Image (cartoon, rainbow, N blue to C red; front, side):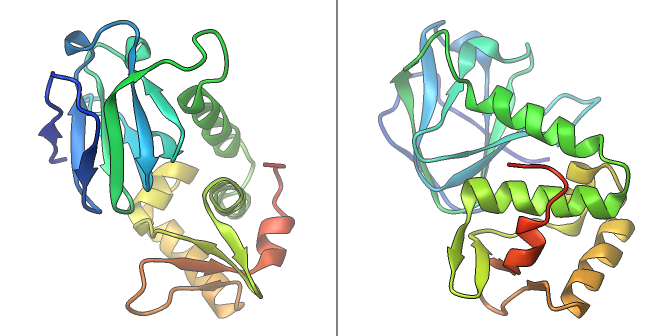
Amino acid sequence: MSFRFLPDDPIAAIRMPTGQSVLIDPSARSGTACLEVLEGIARVYCPCEETEGMTLAFLQAGDQLRTDRLCSEGVCVEALTPLCFRSDAEISDPGGFDAVNEWTLQLLRIRHLGSAEQRLQALFALLVNRLGRRCGDWCHLPFRLTHERIGELIGSTRVTSTRLISRLRSADLLHVPAGEPILRLAPTLIESSPLAA
């Protein structure tokens, strides 16, 4: 994994291009500070050697990443779309909703479904319901994930993910438009998910 380090001093607007990652070092942050996404979609993942690359959450505009709840090695934030966030935000609801904890719980629920097919369908439904939108006859997800990343998220191998995605494409339930950074998913696939969003 490659990432750069987030500067220790709070910054009102940090812009990152798609694919770039920064490491958030919890020892350099105050207890009341947090990151807040202003624009775009980010993936939060673990940089620890044992779990390197493990996805903890996805964040969008308005979501906060509390720096007082990170493991000692910190977390990385990856821009899935062009991203802008601030590192000088104050925690908006200290005792309430935590976007990272909610995402981690939902991803854990997906990992406990019985089959890889169910887990993939539930993952796509969760991503579309939280981060996508309905556009005519399709649901759009504004970013793509590699087959390897999808395998990590559903607890399978890249080969299994590729096979399952090929089935969805053959059944006309998933389209990957050439030259566009989006996925199109059939509403029937999303609406029949084994887990409610």
